[in-house]
Structure formats: structure tokens, C-alpha cells
Image 1 (spheres, one colour):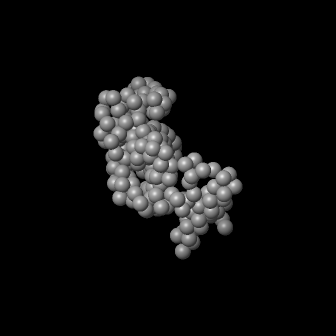
Image 2 (cartoon, rainbow, N blue to C red):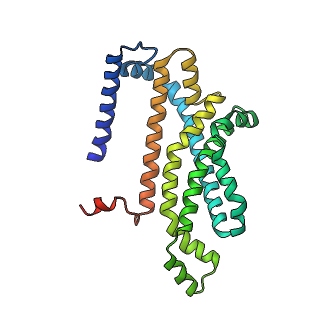
Image 3 (cartoon, helix red, strand yellow):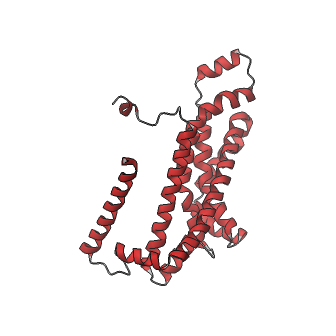
Length: 254
């Protein structure tokens, strides 16, 4: 029961804090609209907001699929082919050394204003945490397990798929959680640079028209769906990895 009550209490507290800031600051509605005004704007434009939200969610989902697939395949390649580490590791680091926000205009120029550039942006942001976390997990396999596998005559591929990959799944799960949290950033940034639909596109145009309440409504819708997506992925990972501890050591002793 508390699992459902706690989020509602937190949301209510945040709304009250928001309203308190509006009262104390005395900011005009076009700078900081009150929660009631934002709720009215959301209800008045609900079909428009939900339509744009569907586009953004599709971009996030496709970006997650592509980013996870590329990240997992890169980590497996780095773990299995040792010479490839000299070539792929610098590329892995360089993928984050260059600000993704700076690549957004180039991706829009190359891929157009459609969904492809936003999926590419989300993929680039998701790729690094998945690849880095999974590769780190593959490198930190318990030495006793690998020694036992060698004693039993296991080859490199068998050891990778039967020993290292299962042992690295908790690390991959951590990377997936981080990737899910940052996935909306790539899609929305791409929509800000150039798009014809999406919540980022709607927020940008609402800001240009000084429709601050509509902009806040779109922002809160994006935050809501991002939180829901995170908890869906987190719940799925907990079910897929039941052996992974779900509490800190001091919490387990209580």
C-alpha cells in the first residue's frame, strides 16, 4: 500500500511547494504559473499534448532499443576480442568527450527534421552508460569462477557466454537504469533543434508564444512519462534478476 501512497504524498508536497513559491515570489503568470493554471492549460490542450507525447515516447523507445543493442554488442566485442580494445575504447570515450548537444544540429542537418535525428540523439546518449557498465561488469568476473571454467576445459566463447555475461548482468542492469533516466534528454534536445512534432517542439513553440502554462504542462507530461518508463524498466529488471540484492547491506540486517 505504501508503494502507491508514497509517490502521491511526494507529488502533493511538490505541488504545495510550487504554490508556496508562487505566493512568496509574486511572480507573474507568464514567468511562473500556478499549479492550477498549468492544470487548466493541460486539460484545455490535452489532446495536443498527448499527441506530441506519443511522438516523443516513440523516439525514446527506439533510442533505447538502438542504444542498448549497440552498447551490449560493443561491450561483448571489447571483452572477447582483446586487440579490438585498443581501437574501440578510444571511440567509446570519444562518444562522450564530444558534447551530444553540439551534435544535435549536425544530426538534424544529416537526418532531417523527422524521427531519425531524434532517435540518433537518444541512441548516442544511451550508448555510453550501457556499454561502459556492461564492459566493466564483464571485466570484474569472480576470478575463482573463471579459473574453475578453465580447469573444466571451457573455451573463451563458452566462458564469456556462460560465466562472464551472467555475472555481468547486474552491472548491465545498472547501466540500463541510467540509460532509461537520460533517454528523454536526447529526444527532447533533438526536438528543440529541429522537429515538426514532439513535446520538445511543443515546449519551444509555447515559449515563443509566451504560453508559459502550456510549456509547463508539456514539461510535466514529459517528466511523468519519463518517471513511469524508469519504474517500468526497473521493475522488469528486478523480475529478470531476482538474485540481485535489492537492499543495501545495512538494510538487509534490519
